[in-house]
Image (cartoon, rainbow over all chains, first blue to last red; front, side):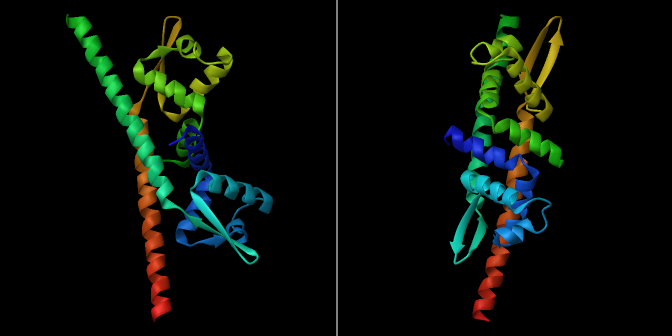
Length: 108
Length: 108
């Protein structure tokens, strides 16, 4: 996954309003104004959050006539999970190797 | 995982400098000045990044004499992975249920 993509996904997940929008979209695809209704902020602010979510790939939007409908994209979560898990595995392996090296030095 | 914790972990992962610091720490625990050396920014900026990483639980720091040493905490990655995977599973289930409901309406 390219670094800019990693940035965008994790920045989107690190914001409580964006997570609330994702949760709402997991119940059903929704228009921007439906998403805005329970949120205590301007429509312009909601649109910005949705744009950030769309750039991250966590949400896809589709314009039909005058209504823009937002859909959740669960695949992108799977990509982020894979990134995290690969990274953790690599990092744990490195730290284990370092631990083994230090043990050798102490005992050797 | 409490929402503020989710915020802090994903905000930490959404920043390329913080990811570079995590990668460096997976090679070995390091002092703040060692971490700062390859980074093109002030020591104060590096300290801020490290504080954010420490608040997220991805890094632990320890002061021995005059040197503060930073360590990677792989467990926190595992927590973030679990959060993502639980969320994705819940959301996929909801969307599947919605899909089934819409099929029924179309066919019933």
